[in-house]
Length: 274
Picture (cartoon, helix red, strand yellow):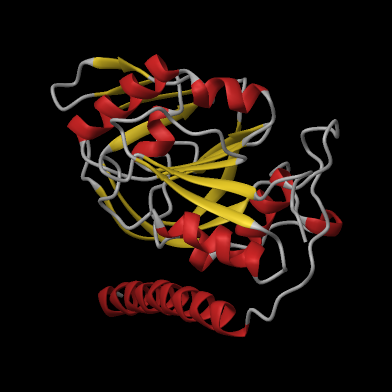
């Protein structure tokens, strides 16, 4: 079964030599496997930063340190392929540093403003508080993209490790509202952002291993018929996600239990003072 007319679905992990710190390259593997399990022909590409970016239908961009992040953004801007492919309908997932660099600007290690690729209306600055580290749980926004059959995305789970504060501009929309953790950190409780077929988040894990509905949303975008509206999601064959959902439930239950335990502890302290 061919995914796109006359050729396999091309999924590209962007610059794993620069942006491979947190294992986010696993997002490309998850997408490829979920397509293959449905009988869809897939080509999984790994694109090093010293070569031209290949033509692909889906691009995943992961997290990394400040220096490699600047190099990745500069190289992507000079290459030009990513911007062109998005204009042609390609899907992009940016995580952490990858999220920041597909925005308009982000800081380097010396707090100098660096140009982003400009795929999202997003600006990032250095935070002044503690670094955001730990489990992150978020509820998709009411206007977040919907998956197959118009079904809303479930709660999102992952972990974050970043010092940036990202502000979503009017040309994009927040992906979710934080339940536990920091997320974008701009004071509005938002996590991630999206516009068209471009989506960014601070969720590691890898995020698509923990959130298979999000993985299928990206595949549904990429497999939508040519000429369809940008929000169109192709209907995909269902998969037996028992193990994946068990992992997801385990992580969510652990966070929920931690929150409940903290609440009980606080109530106990209040009662003890009375």
